Picture 1: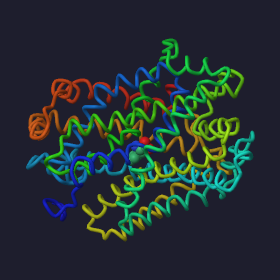
Picture 2: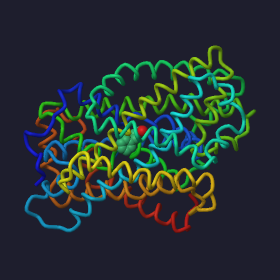
Picture 3: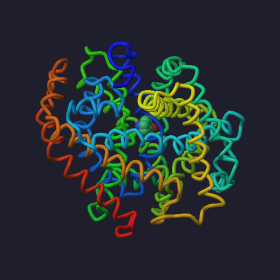
Length: 460
Ligand code: PHE
């Protein structure tokens, strides 16, 4: 068993401390960058509808399951799987634990690359470059310039690693407590502005009204992947955070609050970006398919046309930078915690290892838009491929294994008792049904479809 199990483990101070830390991890680029471009790409309203259906069923159940698994065992994923199963020996336990632990290691490199793009835009806005950032071709010129984005990537990654090394997460979390509400207010202002531009109505309709003809298996796969990414589920993060949670925190209440916060920010980001795409492209529906660059192309145009746009833009990118930083800290922290728990590495060694790993995998992601743009699988760039591998292939698999561990191997009642020790647990029936039946079926479907898509049998 890991050395820092039991009471020696650092704990979050109470309810609020826990909620803020997990919300800091959940709210990030997944909400502001990833959610709008995927919603736009996968048909708007229909994607939104499926996202919500998944969120209220097994999204909720999985967060509860992972958090309480962490709290019960007081260990990060590898140890938690082992400890929860007790004396049962199953090789799938080991594989399941490690798979959970590996996902954040895949996400960290490209998360920091996009974080670097944010730093670049923040720098442009703070140094009076808002007009050039809004010009056609600025974004593409930037991401195709090979090692230039790598420089910004290193800056963002370096900040993350330094914070972890110096152990000053607390300071950053405190700063983000101030930043988060400002980000929300800014997002509301920008969203209202976007939605009232001429031509934006078509975008609002596209975003909110489901068009069932746009439904495909890939809509479900993408919505499910987004759910995992945004809520940091299916990758050991919540197991790790749950393990730091005090025994008196109400797991159910905390979960519902975090889910609400995360979804609100994502929805707002959609309202900022999707109507604006329609308004600024003169109603050209093809423009919504801009992929990972959607926010970087659209948002500067919104600011450019707005009164005080360069000021609001600068504030916006500073806030997004903080939101992204609190998330990348949590990703790196989980990786470090696995390496120190399981391999008995020192924190410093684990952090340095992850730093170089994130460079080794992040540089190809960046070059994938420039010199290496000939590399692609199923039409995806290197960054998209890593993202798809993590959130659409591995996360569903991890979540499936967690459901099997809880629902079949050990018995769900053990976790229900854990949750009930501090919560009224109103969602018990949903939880039981989802973990035992619904989630395994949907997760298997999603996993099989993603693999089929990677092999070219289904169009992504
Ligand atoms: N959920 C975070 C976001 O939405 C990203 C994240 C992914 C955080 C994986 C932790 C782990 O940006």
